Image (cartoon, rainbow, N blue to C red; front, side, top):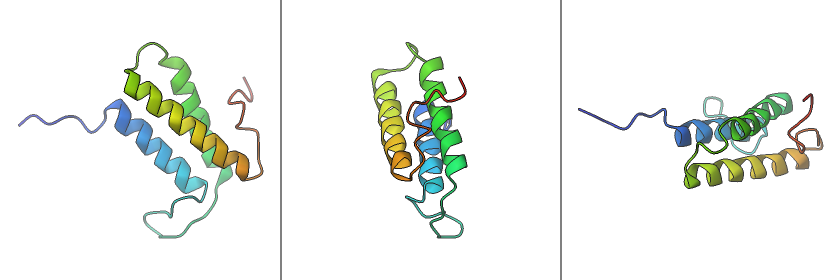
Length: 94
C-alpha cells in the first residue's frame, strides 16, 4: 500500500501558510473557532517561508515556487494591513 507522503513540500508550505493566516486573524483557529491575532507568531511564519524561498532557490518545481511566492506575497500584504510593517522586507535582523 503505497500512498503519496503527506509531508511533501506543497503540503508543508500550505500548512505554514494556514498557520500564518490563523495568527493574522484571517482564519478562525480550528480548535477554538475564534479569530485572534498573534502578530509575532505570524511574522515568525512569514519569515520562515521567506527563508525557505531563499534556501530552496533552484530546487523547487515551477508550481512549488509559484505557490511559495503567492503565499509570501499574500501573507506579507495581510501582515502589512495589521499595522506592523516589519515583515515587508523579509530581511529584518539579517
